[in-house]
Every structure is written in structure tokens, then in C-alpha cells.
Amino acid sequence: MANTMSGNFIRFIPENININFCENTIEQILNMDWNNNVPTIHLSEQLLFADAGQYFESAKCPKCDFNVTEWWGSAMDSAYSDKHGFLNIEATTPCCGIKISLHDLNYHYAQGFHKIMIEIALDSNCIAVIENATFKLLDITGAKWRIIHARY
Image 1 (cartoon, rainbow, N blue to C red):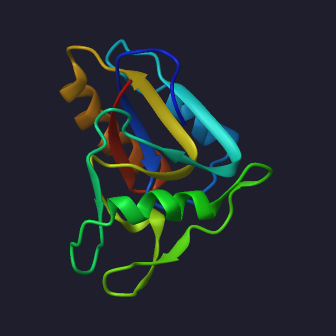
Image 2: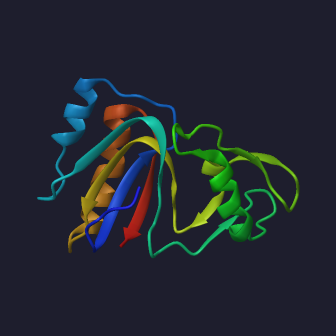
């Protein structure tokens, strides 16, 4: 999901790509202490991809650590439908032939798929935001979250 504003952003997506949260949980997330930052919550019924923007460097196989970045682009294209978005993100790696989720590749910088994403513009207190939010999100939702640093 590309952001039209330029700058640096911190994004939080659940590790479980199919998780859904009730309205009360979303409200608790919005009411967390974000150290004077205003979070934006992106919700979708379709699976979306949260990228790192200019920070993206590579994608590697989680089994053998082979750089699959060139293959990854065509795998993403195959998984995407203009009408339905991402439907099947399972693919077979070109290196060791394992069937994996594109979500589970080792991305440098972190990226991933989601139906809910929390995004804040990065400022000088980002370390405090990340440390606080990581624990609080786990506490509120019971879910592990992936932290994505993005630059556009």
C-alpha cells in the first residue's frame, strides 16, 4: 500500500494475516499512548501488502537464505488480481522448491501482508513509540505484530 505523503513511517501489521479485531479492540488501539503521534488504522476485507518503500532491499528464502528478489516480483504479480487483490500468496521458491507464503519470506527491510495496518509518521521519538506500541499491541490484541519501517 503506497503512501502519497513523502517521509518516513512506522507500520504495525499482525503476523497472523487473517486476524480480525472487534470495534472495541480497534478503539483501544487508537487510544493507546502513541507519544503524541496520531496513528492511522487501515482496515480492509482484502489482503493488502505493506511495503518498506525506498527501504526495500531484498527478499530471501526462509529455508536456504537464497536471494529471491528477482523471482519475488513475478510471484507477487501472479498472486495479485486487479478485481480481488491478493488471493493466494502461496508460492514455490525457485531455489529449494519449498511451498511458502510470500508473507514468510525474509524481507530486508520487513514487509508483509495484512488486513489491518497501523501507521504513524516517524518523528524524533520513534524508539519510544516502537517499544511502547509493541508491548501494548500484544497486550490488547494477544497477537504478535511485525514492525515495518517505510520511506517514500
